[in-house]
Amino acid sequence: MRKLRENMHVPTAEELNDAHVWFETYEPRALFYRAATDLVQRALNRDSDLTLAEAVAVLLQTWNAAYYRFHGRFSARHFQDIDRLLQEHDGRLRAFRKTSLDALSGDDAPAVKRVFEEFEAVLGPVGAAKCLHLLAPRFFPLWDRAIAAGYGIGLAQKGQNAERYWQFMLKVKGQCERLAWERALGKNPLKALDEYNYWKYSRRDSSASAAGREANAP
Image (cartoon, rainbow, N blue to C red):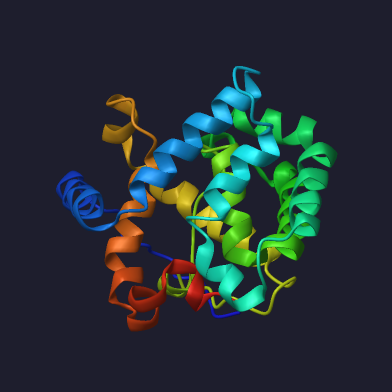
């Protein structure tokens, strides 16, 4: 793993706004994020005919579609594996959903790494982050290979990225601590920062532009 950058750039309000405008204008998957977020909340509130696993699957089959072009179709067995993960980690994920990255401490490392490791085994390193963010949107940040590289973290093969994701969380936490204006406006700094990171790193990668964010992270 490459050495982490000690002084990550903290985007200004203007940069975050520019990234948000670009994202909403040119990235159609923004709609899938809003839809999946709503479905997950409804499923957790038992206000939907969909189960939590079904709500998560809606996002994964759209927002993460390229992954399945490299790793086979979204099968019934795959869905069962996702459902199993959600049930096994239900209590821990609900606890994470109630907190934010601001509260992250060294004591969280074993639980975070274990959850990420098990989700990565099923969904890959990028899919795991997407799924966990959907379940705890203010605690788990989003990444892809281009974003991880921009943070000085080279992703390894599937199953070897739990420590890398933990280091990424620490870096993002440091950035979010200085995004006070986002918290004051009631916005989620992790979503705003992901839009900025995608705008800055991922859209410039020709492979990601051609085949989607996950295509660069098999």
